[in-house]
Length: 44
Length: 204
View: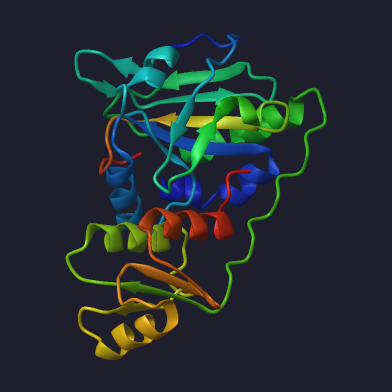
């Protein structure tokens, strides 16, 4: 697991509505809460 | 995810944008999110190359080929402020996580812009679909995930001859899926989903 205090690795990924999410686009504007989970159709 | 979706306004007030991430495809995400009653927050597909983002954050479980159930909070300066696993079979305390976001925001050194409110969906829209069509299903999943069930009527050209005739009159062809917004008719499912998403839940 990444360390608290580390710089967040930049990434871009597509989502379930066809949007393109770019983490770095949010820097300077807001925090980002990332919920990793094993598989769809499981509780999160 | 529904517990998080229900707390979106609190998260936005705390200048926090939530995302879900797994190795599933966007199609799996869309179907699952619709089955949950509609999820508009981004479900990101870390699908190809599989788990690349999970590997960068140390959440990818190589032997299982899946991500851990883990939460990472990145502040507006791009620094990781929270990183915890509840193990793949564990359960997250969403209320506690939202409270942690609020605490982080309250102690964050710097002024952040107010998060924009989501736009109102356009009125005068109709979605035309047909049976046994993956593109129609993709559009219907987007309708559910954008919480447009009340605002966007659906007409099925497979069973409704009048719908087929109306669509042909409006757009020049009876091909579905199709989205009508006022005088505008579009037929490509990717365009339809992008139009609906842009109107209702653009990425901020």
